[in-house]
Image 1 (cartoon, one colour):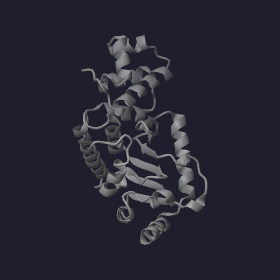
Image 2: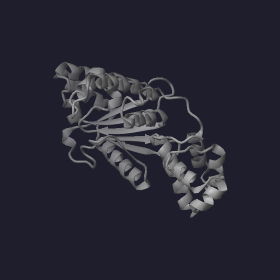
Image 3: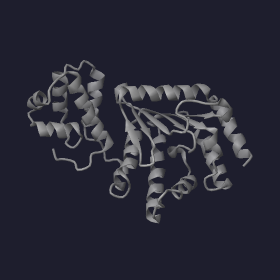
Image 4: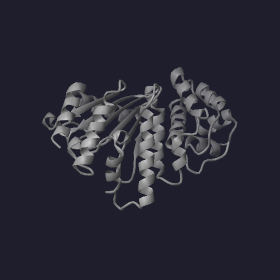
Length: 283
């Protein structure tokens, strides 16, 4: 299998999981490479996501590592199998790879939990709202890239359409609801869109009002994507230099606790809808 010059986050994640499995079983790189019939440099490339691994070799490694978690092994095998070409691949070489990794993460999530304090979740933004966001990037984006990012964001939202859509729970702070990106008209249309999508049976929106006070992770954008097994959950957070993806058990537990806390203090769904409607009515 050919080497990849720039593996995706999902490919790198698979490699990291294989290395974690090997180290947990105290199997040396030399021993693992010998079992798989490859040299040590190729094993290193596999564990970095630079080279692919066959399903047969993955199962051989899992057996050698005495991994008894069959659901986990099957989930890893599912990551090995060739997937259909994702729509986001059309944007490769045109947009930052991190944006494509977010789309791939969402496409493979079984359930998503997000928390936003200043921005409306990207997956729920109207085109006009997203356009207003893209126009305040520093340094300024050229017009062709603004158009590409807008098209990419619109396509991302398709993941919430259809019968196979993942469950989605979004916690949005009142501050984000009151930010008038694009002006009053655009802001009102954005709130109306939130009310519309919240009617979908698989989408739940919860609002944290100002009066709820402090909570952990305030100000941070969090996208928690649940995988086929808990070990393969992923947290994506935003930063000024692009998206970051977190996988360590301690990190996953921390962000689950953050989201649980936010959901405890957030208004229930219907009261959240009423809250959003009231803000929109006064714009």
